[in-house]
Image (cartoon, rainbow, N blue to C red; front, top):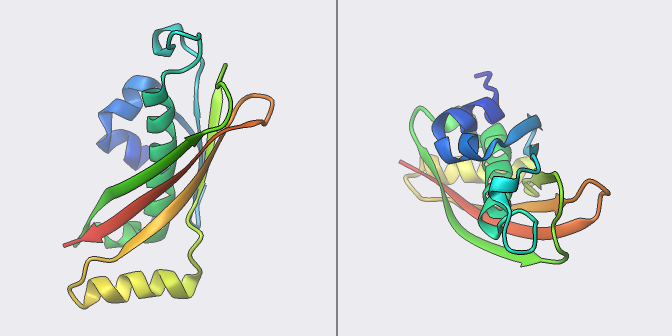
Length: 148
């Protein structure tokens, strides 16, 4: 199955489209997307609201997940189950989120095997959000499951 994970995410998650998230790349358990700097997304300190920043990161994690498990969509639904976020610096300007599924190919196969056995596998996707200067402004761990 060949799919454009970024495009699929934007089709199925209208809020990501509303924010104007742009996907630069997605493949092999990784995804990179951007949040343009828009005044209507700003908070009281002239940076993107924490909710917009979170949506950027969660969208990147979803696309990374889809590149690894998108072939399971005909029988399973992916859902984010947990998230831990740490804001490191004031985020200003355009932001870029890079997500990666740290699991090895063997661990990914175990996720599918658990799904095959009727279980509800869970796994994490790590995300770094950087400003235009490449400074990390936030890190997230998003927990996912695929369930029938």
